Image 1 (cartoon, rainbow, N blue to C red):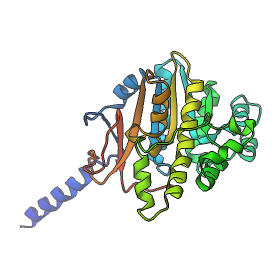
Image 2: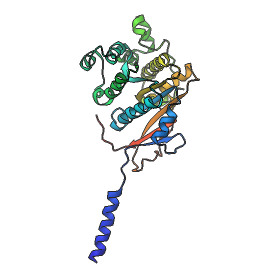
Image 3: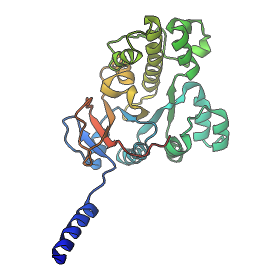
Image 4: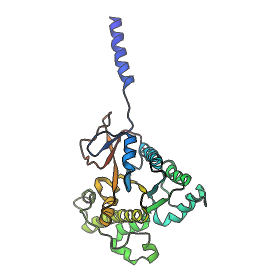
Length: 290
């Protein structure tokens, strides 16, 4: 009897010990698991890659770095980096850092860095610096997006030509045909004022259109532009992707979308899952960094 109980306990304990804990899983558009070596091989064929992220997830940031490193090797250094987290008017300081003209402390003092820059984005910037790669500050200065949210898109017309140079060419087309924007409208609620809703959506559009224009200005034949942005800016082929497609439909672009899952095997979610070329599923209970 004792031996039987011992066998049962060992069996239970052994099964717990043998359980696999997955930190991530990539899927292709058809829902098939894809290994990272095949993922890298396929990504290397694209002109532009949007790597969506959850800003506070360390696994995603680690994968951004590892995939960037692998793509650098696969394409013999023919890659360009860019990110939502840097604003256009800070490009001179960022370039000075990449060229070794200023140090990390000077960059910190002169650029509007995100609070998680040191842990999550500095490794990417330093990789670009070490490999002598271009790193493009793609986003609109936040003060102009804020102005749009408060005063409307038309208020940008009053800016100086220098200030306008940090924004996508005006007028910026804003339409609810853009994937993701109807969702933003719904989030505002039925009781929100129409003008307020459209100003909020227009502010998002200024970011997406400016990042799209920044990418188009800096892509080069034979090189892959890797852009790091919040998942919302490219999911479902909306946001930045949509604005680029309006201007250059022939570019070959891939979106890496990120989803959270409660399933231990990190299967694709059953709800609200609209896949793109590549889809990263991560544990929903992963510790958040902020």
